[in-house]
Amino acid sequence: MMLSKGPAIFRRSAVREKREFDLKAGRAWSAAGRRGVAIACERGAVWITVEGDPEDHVVVAPGSFKSDGKGRVAALALEPARLAVSPAAR
Image (cartoon, rainbow, N blue to C red; front, side):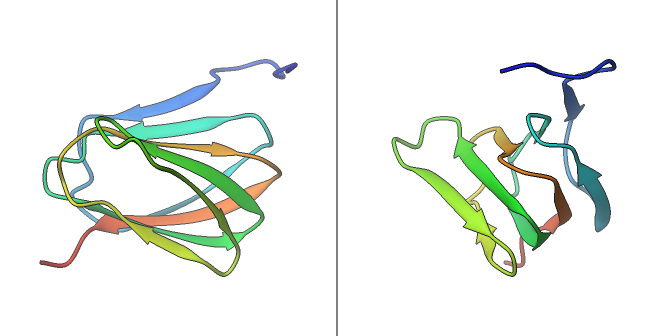
């Protein structure tokens, strides 16, 4: 897969507040998921994987995903995507 110039991944230590951002196709985002992460795919499609979870997930807009807080969460844009990420509600 060819990536355009610039960082291929946005990496955060944790999700503490709601954030919205765009990912170009082939770009990834990740964050520590110690408290759980809610991801809403508002446009496009993303592949989501969670450290220690054998299941991967494909989320297509307007879908969403919530991790259980047991590992780093990563999302890879399968096509241009807009995500809203926030701490998962407990």
